[in-house]
Length: 360
Image (cartoon, rainbow, N blue to C red; front, top):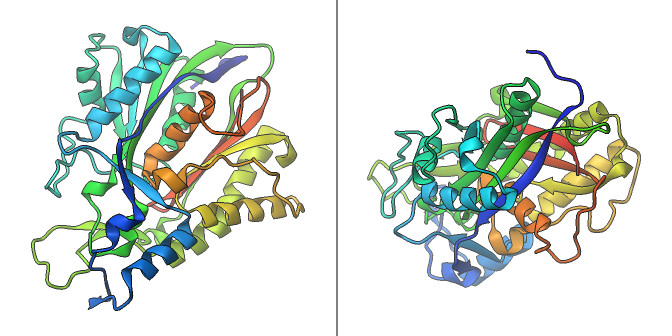
């Protein structure tokens, strides 16, 4: 693969789909949570308040019963195409990042035949056979990895326009008897990346990805319900929250630093960090540890825009949704200016960690 000089991968359009169904903490007041097979013997209001204190999640969003993941992805994709002002037939690739396919309401079965990228292409009525659609299964860091793949495709000369979608309906695969279910949410985000020649470096400047599968691959898995009386064979998203927190706070800063150093800039050049919205306190701890690696004790105010308090954790959708809101001036206190540097970073099942540096 030959990298063409002065060719850069830039963002030209974004779109998102935020479900209208708001699920506040009070929705879980009548829940029955189990831990280690034993019914959790605590006041539910206390459990909810403690959860909010730890994660900073006050609300999450669930999709309507008649929708599936590829439906909301297609809506976000159409909005991204419109924002970019391109002809949909000019797309060279559609990379759909998800983990659970289409899961219908009332079911726990995953449908990925055909691929969700193919379903979105069909929904959008893109006729061009040279527009190649494929799915990327990479845990929560999927959308960031899709952006990295788009960069490879564009800089190799194989593509001029690539759409990367991150969409998930986690409400369909969570265990209602597991208090961790309060973390997860639904949503979709899509971003158009285009090839651009420029005298000064813009767009994706550098990236870094790592996988820690041997010792940490079991921190996020599919497993049976916490309810010992459930024997229907369903499996649900399960995580070791404490170990995952420790892993992320220790390793994510190292990967982000590698990407920043590869880009040849300093942490003080970064004006915005788009980090996976998994846990508010965890993201804050990651930022503090990152700045410590540069012998800095203070993280600048307004460095990290956050949506987790009202959108929850929608896995691969968190960053592209956040980016769409950011670029459309829908997050108070944030506004992009040409020449600003940003970092995109994520961590999740695998365990995968990735980051890329971007210049607007």
